Image (cartoon, rainbow over all chains, first blue to last red; front, top):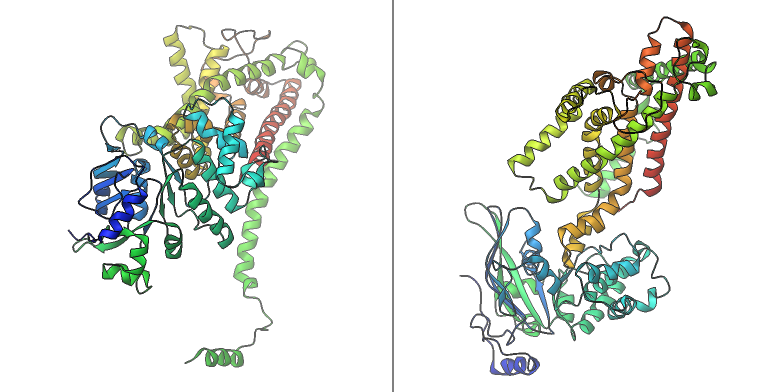
Length: 296
Length: 302
């Protein structure tokens, strides 16, 4: 096993405990002692295959409540694959297979009686490219609550709350009935975030949410993430290391290792720690090489 | 050699103003002429046919053509009332049969089917084959179905509709699949990530987005069906002298009537046939124009 389990000081553990005080007690994980107690989600020996291709090898992560966890690493290191396996979006890829476990509040989301639809209602997702529906701004937001059968007495209020939550309300309040495609790229992405929070998920997965946006729009989304974390648990995949260091509480660094016989690159987790430690005192030389720009 | 040196040597050895144009040598021009001729040939044949028909039929393109039934007694006033109404009945019932079946099949194949399963591959291959089957075969197939259904006389609205629906089903399925495929995957993923089911995603996101494409393909399919005579003759659609009022009524069809009259020895009847051809062409052009209109008006650039 090549996964590096970083050790941590007592101070850090205390710090973590402080931050997750309000969280119910979970089993302390041996695998990631730096991880928060009572994590919302955990992966244990997660392996993902696409057909014969081994995409991700033995990933052990835990995601703390009301924290932002960033998954970083070079292209092809499997970070997006890990993210998509957290709400079973990988099921949509033909031939995708998951081994190991992904638990949500201790429950395996790949368990035999688990409906992926229900999983996705709890664990929402924002994509790389803004993908609003070809409908009005209002209907984009109302769609989720409608299809998931949420008991809504006042849809207007739900829409307003979601748009306020995504810091978009002031910009669109006078044109709720106009098509979402008329919005700018950054506004569209905030609409997609609003659409996701309208269904009141617990966890929000973000797959490079700013990679299609300009720096100003990116800054707005980053501010938004910091606000959202008071209500949601956020897991973000990003190519942008500055972004990871700016917004996240914890960072997982992945890299890819070529298979000796086939040459296929399998992604693996190198280091998972508090963001500050990853960027200031990385424990693994590969992490250090990556964050200092010598690799990837 | 550094970049500056390369630039300098090219500038001194070759001027940009050579005076010629490599795109206008003899071979290129000959090839261009060949292309023009091919295009001209196709268009010319079509124009000659249409003009010839129009001249031949213009004299009979009058109210009688629409209001009178076919008459071999008053040849100069013979009409296509039964054929026109029959074709409209056939179109309507064909649409009712073929559109739901075609769209449902396409939705299954695109949104639900596991494309790696052998039975889906089998359907896939046969769908392509069906689109290439000669129309008369569909007439035979419809005749067989009508026999199973227990109709001894098959030249009725239902029989014609079954034949034409079978004929255009592959067209509708294929064009609907194209329209569904044009809906970006991101829309489906966006919907599924919110916790919508595949069914909700298809019904509320994918199908509405694909409606313009589906409508276009369906209308083009129907405009092919309205001009078909062979499968209708095959199941025994003949001339009638009354208006069809229900699916089990005997029916006439415009193309079949044209076929019968165009081969008649009397000049008046041939003239009437030409007039009816103008009408049929106008109907088909109208439907195609509608299809193009829908496509241009609602086409979405993702």
